Length: 335
Ligand code: SAM
Ligand code: SF4
Ligand code: SF4
Image: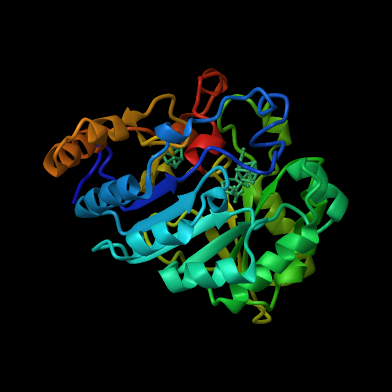
């Protein structure tokens, strides 16, 4: 087992398969920055499926058990189910998931992903109010088509389906109870995420954060709820159940209640850079190493030695000063 400088094991790997996206969510890829002239990674800079699978195998040797595919928008990668199939065969991986905006998740795609070995899926949806959602994704994408994607995932049994909602003050906070109500009793788990100061382009301000405590209060005013124990060490969402048996929801409070002490996640960008924290300023170039024909042992040694000295705990030490750092963008690191 690989432990970092704060005694945290390496368990989860989030792999961003592309830095491109067909949405322009205002809190993630604001149009002013990600316009026509923005230079995304070139095709030859992006990891091939074979390169991703090889790195995943090496991470698994170091203790990684969970892999999440993300982006940008992961379903923009053609034939992503071929990658899913390769990763599903990696020894030691017991949970293989994906986070998507759902826009390209047809019934056929959901079925193909399930057949290839994807265990579960998380679909992002910030509001059920069509005007609010269209304004937030900033490409005029309708709520109805994300709801169709959720149905497609449900039919393909990509369970439990998680619905991720970033809550932003004055933008979609009034959608919290609606979202909870809509998904109560469906078996899907809504997770309310605090708006975070990832990257530098979204103009994050503390005033725009709706503390999760407030989200819980709003829901508790509508239905009786109880807190639940976490499922495993390092689970980022705090869970609550509806007392009437209509299921559960989660909150992810990275800003107001940081959970760095149990952070077991490493992140790989689409161009193969290893980041040890969502708020890191620099990555370690694993793809370069791999393309220079490093052996498996050399790559494993490199990952182990970077993890060993990892002492990141950004959310615990967040301040005016840290907020000004040149942090990696969310669309590159994948959440
Ligand atoms: N495009 C896919 C999607 O939206 O699900 C996957 C990548 S996206 C970067 C992963 C998650 O990060 C999404 O649920 C998104 O809402 C969330 N996210 C993006 N920017 C964020 C921010 N500033 N604070 C909190 N969550 C954010
Ligand atoms: Fe795209 Fe996901 Fe970022 Fe929205 S949150 S812009 S869907 S990568
Ligand atoms: Fe992990 Fe960094 Fe987030 Fe803390 S701030 S939980 S170390 S990713």
